[in-house]
Image (cartoon, rainbow, N blue to C red; front, top):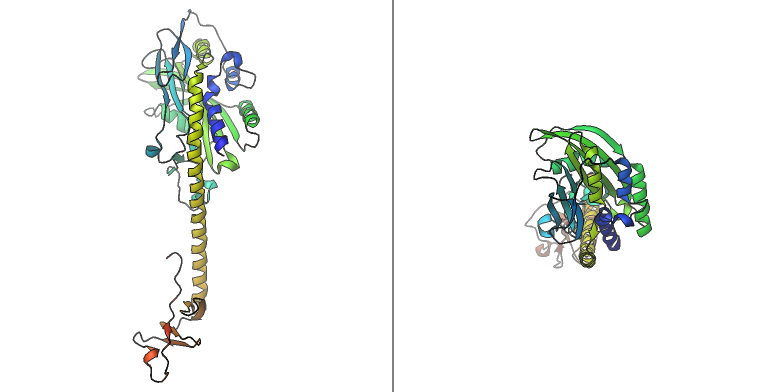
Length: 375
C-alpha cells in the first residue's frame, strides 16, 4: 500500500505538468483538448517563462503582464487531524490576466476523502459524514459531476450561491485511459475512475462569467478500504461567451510546464519517508479497528448471554478455588462455595457460613458474579 500511495501521488500531481513534446495519446490533457476546440486569438500574445513561486517546483509560459497566485503548499498533519494529506506536496495555483482573475486558469489540489461505509468503524456509526478520519473528510464517494458541482465550485467560489450549469459531460474515455495508465504503473491496483467536465455560468461583482471545470474521481477500491480522492482538477474561466477566444492561450500555458528535476527528486525522497510514516500509522489504525470490532462482538455476545441467563433465571459465578465460571440460580443475592464444591445461597448479606456452628467448616469463600465485558 505504501508504494501504491507514493507512485499514484506522484502520477496525479505531475500529470498536468507533462511537457507537450512528451505527451502521448493517453495523456489526460490531450484528451481534454479534444473536448476544448482551438480557435485563433485575434491579437498577438507574448509569453514569458516564469517559476512556480513557492518552491520553484516547475516553470511555465504565461502571457506577459499576467499574474501568478498560489503554488505548492504542504499540509501539517497535526492541524489536519492525521497524516493522509501530508505525504505529497499539493498544488493550488492560478495564472490570471488581472487581479480579479477575469481570465484565469487554476489548478486545484488533489485531496483524499474517506467513505466510512467500507470500514467496520464506519459501519458502527463512529465516523459520520463530515467528520475527520486520519486527516480525511468523511464523505460518501460522489460522481465526478456531483463532486465538481457540490465540492469544487463551493471551494473556489464560496460566496456565490446561484449558478447555472449549461453543460455537463461524463468523459468515459478519459476515465478509461487514466485506468490504463495507472495499471501500467501498478498492475495490482484496485483503482477505478470517473471523469467529468462541467460548464457553468454565474455572476461575480456584477460581471457575468463562464467557467469550465474538469476533474477525475479516483476510488481506491479494495486496497483503499474507503479511501478516494480527486485528480487532475482544474478550471478555466473568462467573461461569458469569451471561452473560445482564450482557449489557445490556455493551451499554451497548460502544455508549457517544465518540472524542476532537483525539486522532483527531493519530493520523491520526501514522499518515501512520509509514506513510511503514514503506512505505519495506517497499520495502527487497522489494529485499533480490529479491536473496536472485537469489542463490539464481545459486547453483543455479553448482551445475548445476559438475555439467556435472565430468561432461564440463572447467573454466572466465578469459583474462587478453580477460577472457573459456574452457572447457578439467580434467586438469591449471595453465593458461597467451599473446597469440596459445596454451595450455599443466601439473601442475608451478614451471613457467613464459616461461623455457622451447624456446618463446622471454615473454608467457604464468596463466589462472585462474573464480571461482564466491557469492565
